[in-house]
Length: 302
Image (cartoon, rainbow, N blue to C red; front, side, top):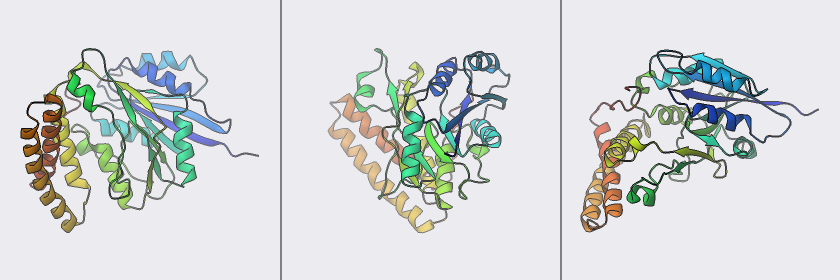
């Protein structure tokens, strides 16, 4: 008799109507008969604003849907509420403005089981509207793909992930509330899991899709995010290893200078110029982390 594998799909939400389509895409997953799904939705709004829409879409399906009100406008609080409610063999994460491909979970699980991974990450492909500036579309800044550095996957993201809940490196770990407004709480969480023995992988074919909001289609927004990404990497990539951290910061200084020169060289092209400036801003964030610069709040302020 084949053992049933249980997956709890965790979705944190904050005032997004798109949540309904996200849930529907999870419900429509094409998974083997021995896979059992449950959906956990943690509402981060001060008021339980998502309760009605979750109840409405839950009536459409036989897949269990659990709603949790986790207020305070701090995404880590909502993510931790999902962790506390989870009971499955696996935890899957998807954002409330994304839609999953029908084979999303099957592809993640296949990759995780094949290599006995603690967690596996897939790409979140951006969907741009016709008003998107061409320089953003050309470099596809909003598509989020997991990366391999020095031959390993160091960290990941919760926009597309599957985590083995009972792995010793995972048990008892929570997202830091101190990073719940700045963002980067998921990168830090997975950096920490890896330091405790977690092994990560990538499933390129496990795809989710995310329409890009108009307020994110500006140089200023991208610059703020790149700077914060750099800070997060600087703070946590080599935490506990002072020598490696120092080398990373020193190399970031060299990279900033290179990016400035490249931006000057390509000043005639908005696409190439902005690309090198934004890369330089990322490395500036890495340098700022060495001086304890605080991470600016990007989320939960609206």
